[in-house]
Length: 614
Image (cartoon, rainbow, N blue to C red; front, top):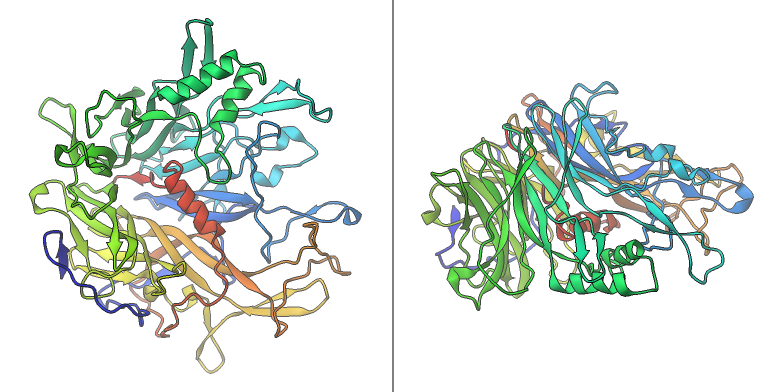
C-alpha cells in the first residue's frame, strides 16, 4: 500500500521496530570491504570515510575526513598514528591568522582495484597531497585544498568540488609572533576529472567584483559545484550568478577599509561565522548544467520571477540520460507571493531544446522539499519536511515526472500508514531500487538511530539494509558449536593488559545503488576510545602504547565511527537469522561523523550532489 498526497492519513502507534520488517523477496547482501571484522573504509591517516557513488562498472568514489595523527606529550617526542581506537577528531578553525589545513580528501575504490577489491585509494585533485604524507615540520607537505568527489560515470569521468590552495600576505598587525595572513581565492568550485586525469574547473559566471569609484577589481571567487554526471557527459550542479547587495556592501568596505589587505578582508567575510555559522558573502545561486565536451555552462531558470534584492537559490543535484535535472528551487507556491518555499523541482528541455522549470507540487503543511535524483524512466526521488505527531520529520517520496498529474507518493516504511520515522532517499537506479536512510528508533525527545534502507518500487518493498545482511557482515562469527556470536576484538592497552570488545557493523546510510544492486554508503564500526590528559595529550603507558578509556567492568569504552561501506547481493547466502530487537542504539553512537554529513547537506549541499546516471 502506498500513501497518496490527497488521502487522509492516520498515524499508527509508534514503538521500537521489531525485526524491522525483513522482506522475504529482498536480496541478501554481503559487505565486501570487510577485513578481520573491520572495514577498509577510509584512506590512510584519516579517521572517517564516506562512500558517495558507484557506477555500472563497480567503480566508486568517496570522501575521507579527519586527520588521524595523534599528538603525544613533549617528553614522548613525536606524533603517532594508531589504528585500533578513537581519538578526538581534529577541529578545523577558520581564521585568517592561521595556515589553512584541509580536512577532506578524495578517494576511489573498485571491485578490481590494484590494491585489492574495494580498497580506498587516495586520488589527487588539483595538486592535493595524501594525508599520510603530511608533516607539521614541512609546510609544503601540508595540504590546503579541500576536495570532494560526488559522482563517476561508466566512462570513469568524475565530478565534485574543491577549494583554492592557501595563499599568504605579509602580516602588518600588532601580533609580534605572526608572520602572515592566509586566504584562498575561492572556497568552492565544481570540477570534472576525465578518465585520462585531465582536470577541468567549472567556473561560475561571477568570480570578480569591480569597484568603479576606486578602480579596483577584487577576486571573490564565486562558487560552483558539480553534483552529477550522465553518460552523455552532461553535468548537473549549481553556480553563483551574482553577488547579493549586502555582500557588495561588505566588499566595498574591504576596499575602502584599512584594517586588512583587501584579499584578507574578503577571506574573513567568506569564512563561516562561528561553528557551522553562515558566511557574510553570499550569491544568487542557480541550478546549472555543463557539457563536458565543450565546457559550456547553462543556468537553469529559477522557480519564480522577482525584481527584488532577495537572495534566491536553485540547485541541480541529479541528472538522467535525457538530461532531465532534479534538484530544488525557491518558488512561490501556486504563484502566491505570500507562499515562498524552497521546493523539489526538475528541469526538462522543451521542443526547442530549452530547459524549463517544473515544480513538484506540495501542500501547505509540507514546509519545504528537495529532489535528490532521477532515473532514466523519469522517476524522481526526494523528501519533504512536515510536522508529524507534533514533531518535524522528513519523509521520502517519489514522483513520476512523465505523469506529474498523479502527484507524489510516500511509500510505507515499517508501518501500515504514515510513520513518524524521518527518511531521505539518496539514489534511484533504473530498476526502481531506491536507497537512503531512515530512523529506526522511537524516542521522540532524543536523537534517533538511523539505518540505511533499500526500497524496491516495483514490488513496493521497504527494508532496513541491516536486516538483509549476512551474519559475517554484521560482526558475527560461528563458534565451535556452530552458533553465531559476535567476534571479540582484542587490543593491547598501555598498561600491558589485553582488552576485548564485541565487533559491530551497522549500515547508517546508503548513498548510491548500481544497476546490479551494488550499494555504497556509510557504516558505523565500533572502536574503543583513547585516554587524554587535561591538556589534550594522549596518555602513553610504559610499553609505549596508549591507554584506553575503561568502564566500571574493566572493559574498553567504545563508540562508533563512520566508514565507507560496499554491499553486494549474494544469491547463495542467507540473511542473518539473529533478531536484534534492541534498536535503541545501545553503545555510545558518536555523532560527529553523522553531523559532518549533515553539514555537507546544509552548507551548502556539499553532500547532496552525487549522482551519475547510467
